[in-house]
Length: 245
Ligand code: ADP
Ligand code: MG
Image 1 (spheres, rainbow, N blue to C red):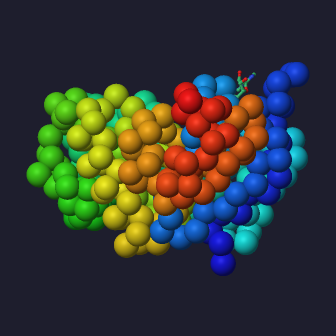
Image 2: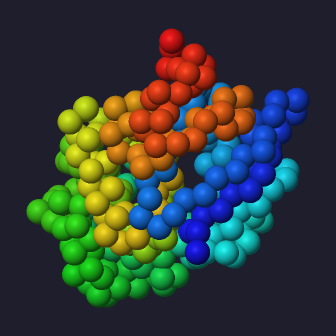
């Protein structure tokens, strides 16, 4: 069964139609990029999948279940995880504690018994950090980590919720080119090995064409093209509208 099926999503803000007839799907293990110029509607679509925005029309199915009107927390429990454009880690806490906190809160345990609960999840947290290449940073405060490493910790935090679908809002914003490729290689290999579907927005075309399995191009709220990176690169309409030909 298709992991995420989005059908005919529509959203207007006053007179502006930010999304119109948006239909697409994400399969398990797939990396799907949404690209388009500023104001195209990428964040609007993203937020309707994450639950931060309610569509005026259309449907969002996860594993065949209708989550169109579910609150973000409920979607999270059903398997919709997300990372944010701005780092969301607690800088005073070390990398392991950030992941421990995510492990505890996604199990809806109280943080009141933080000390004993933290110990229980230490091993699992370090294991998740190891999966993103950050095991040796477990005891380092996030404030002392390089920005690219904080992004890796964020990926471990997102994985703590055992997502089926991972929404990544400009995951490589603010990173150096080599770090970008590394983070996206890592994301792609984790997604493939765990069967996680990844939906990401990105304005770095090297990241998009190098790491997406498929690409959707949005323009003024509508999908004007969808295909593999090669197909999108060759699409005349996309080149005119977006890639600057
Ligand atoms: P993108 O992420 O591709 O840059 P957005 O989804 O943020 O595009 O915006 C699409 C359109 O919807 C833009 O014209 C934007 O001004 C408008 N828009 C987005 N969010 C809001 C909002 N909360 N209120 C009013 N207009 C909005
Ligand atoms: Mg946006």
